[in-house]
Amino acid sequence: EVHLVESGGGLIQPGGSLRLSCAASGFTVSSNYMSWVRQAPGKGLEWVAVIYSGGTAYYADSVKGRFTISRDSSKNTLFLQMNSLRAEDTAVYYCARVDYDYYYAMDVWGQGTTVTVSS
Amino acid sequence: DIQMTQSPSSLSASVGDRVTISCRASQGISTYLSWYQQKPGKAPKLLIYAASSLQSGVPSGFSGSGSGTDFTLTISSLQPEDFGTYYCQQTYSTPWTFGQGTKVEVK
Image 1 (tube, one colour):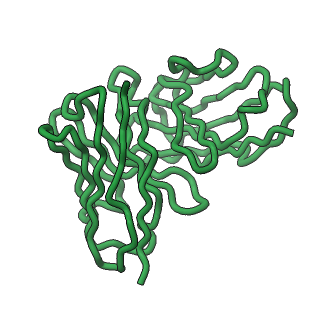
Image 2 (cartoon, chains in turn yellow, blue):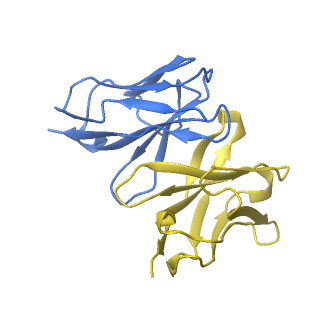
């Protein structure tokens, strides 16, 4: 069965750093496109970043230069390194598998991990 | 960046009603359009990809249509379990963007 489990969220002060993890089972992370999506409290979905199977990554303007998406093939895990965190980065962060054949639709999602940026 | 605008922002309908949600892109996106359903406290769930293809396991009462800039999600006969918020998303070009969501309430 295909499954994604996020971890690494928590309370962090403004300006701090945090690394989120997304462990996959049932498929190979490095062979797929993978993405991060976030949702601020009471708000809609916001796309954050994508990493293609070849390693190319793209970011939302709101996180460019501060966040880095990466993966570890040996652990079959996706990461999101978040630096210079701001209050507006407070959100539930979801990882998702992107299906290239489905016109890049996100067909598998994790349960989410909560990041709170506050002093 | 491509802006996605959904309408209405919310709706309330009765069981059995036909429900339509619109999504408009600020520029043409071919059929690089997906629809997701999200229930409170849960992760989004893919319903429709490539504008009109039904994801495996999704009830046939859901359908999508459109291409270019105008898209529609239709629920042919609203069921009690169809409550939640529905989002469209374009993946034609990065940054990928979501619509603001349409909250569906079942009367």
